[in-house]
Image 1 (cartoon, rainbow, N blue to C red):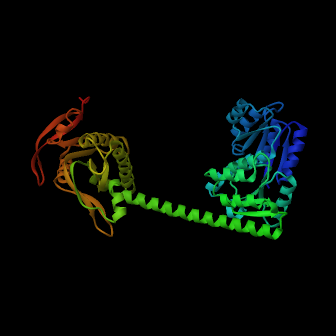
Image 2: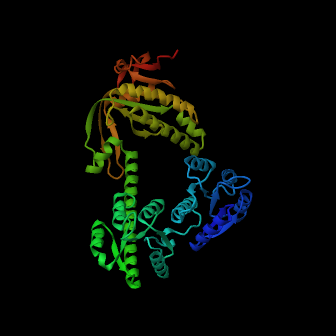
Image 3: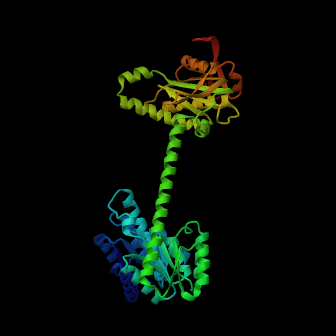
Length: 485
């Protein structure tokens, strides 16, 4: 039984609303001013507070501010009540910390919907934290009875309660029913056909147009001589119908059948969602092993056709002195530092339109102009390389890295079956790796043949003819920012 604290100084309002709430199963605590309301909230810990804004002494706005500032009461939802339907009052109440706002005289169904929504939201953090909470299936389904006749609503709700349904909402017309449905989750609607404002067919039409409500099961309630309209509703998607007067056996059978269908549909939707989450997880794992551009082909054909790509900028980056660092540093610290650096490098790949190919020990290999469209591969690669140098220096353990870049053709494909790997081959790859080996700490070096493609963006410092293993002498150029001394 939810405990509600009603802070109100008007005795007539207290009597009327507290009695109506008690009939709906709420335990109602009463405070006549802000000070006593704060004391009771701290002592009795209600699940919800209804706050009159026009209180004597400290008003409802200030009372709410104090409640929200107190750690022991800050999590209790507060609904502001006022006789003034002014937008400024609503905004002031929300700014003060109120969770919702309603006007006097109170429309009970509307207020109940708002109260339930606040109670649901206040329970969500507890569920997320793993605190004790009854699962939805154990709470039982929520039913909404919609009928303009209070006697009919009372009779139907009483019979439903006798059949074991405890969570029942009600609405006296179609518009109020739509408000309730949009304010909180409901599992089944029992909808009268003949009502003022909106009849049952119009309500059902509005539900089928609403993407959030269209799958909700609806049982139409009608007199025996109104079967033509019932047929129209069934054609529109109503789950079933109930004739008046209600037969308890038929009522139980049709409500039970509709709720069972609802349960099965929810289970199916949960299973589909689980399958989709697993598929997305598998896609993420695949993308972590294979460049994004090759993922679609691998999923479609279970392989990636080897291809030759021209004008690809291949980048190698490795850490200076990494081996000696490993020898004198705990393994946890080594892996932590390496992981932090790789994550930052991956971010730079996205920023500069490049693709990470793989890591080999402490070395990082990437390309520009292969799967990802890149108009100027060398420009992207050099800009990324300079950022990699700066990023490595800025994060723990402040490594120095060196970068080598070369432009040319490559062959790309996947090798292996049990543990496959996407890789690149060719002279361009070998030259880029050798350039990286000969680069000074903290520098980005390119081949002289690639230098003209970036010469307008950077200053170049020739390293002369440098002997590269397996390649012979090759002129190398260090790329420096134009503003560098």
